[in-house]
Length: 83
Length: 198
Ligand SMILES: [Zn+2]
Image (cartoon, rainbow over all chains, first blue to last red; front, top):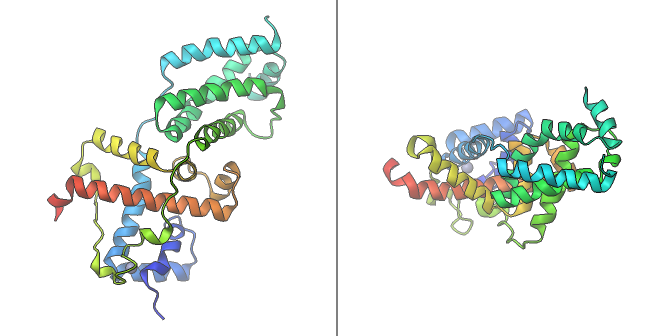
């Protein structure tokens, strides 16, 4: 019996991450081929991850660096004694 | 000097060796903390607590993982401690994110919005703002699972270990987070540029 869209939802993530059996993979692909919503679902789930990976890394703010340096030194000296 | 030697020196009280270790790894740790925290103030607090904790526990570091990984897991514990205090609403069950209304039954009734590439329609700064906002809105346990899996690109098993969850539970959080993010982004994009497309 053919599966309905809800039956695929739990497998979609595994499918996208490459973790389903070849049989299930083929079945999902056949379904996506004729179901517009599931096709959009898969595409946009994929994009969700791609978009979240974008964006440059923020370096540590300079004020934080400065503050940290003296805080860490203080804690260090408390622990190990001043050298 | 290699990491092993720096650690031995740091453990016997050499501050400069400790700072050298921290300097090597702090960028990556801060980048993760910054995403997890969702705002700069919390990120700075977590980063500070992480490094202070690293000093307190420096002699407990055994060297079975790299120093970076060790810092990383301290940071995760600090972030979790900070955010578990704030009560956040849970995400909706998986079924709610199905591409159809479960009461209507036929998915043809509701056509999902196909975003295509949002870079085409939105300024990159606006898009970045939207993304930061939707990720920050996720309840912490989902945000953490999602970011570790897809931004840090860790295997599910590792996400489970770091978040102290079973693999099944980590997997479910990752999926729900991804579905929820997709859902939020769809609504925002449809409102922002959906009309122009149709
Ligand atoms: Zn379908």
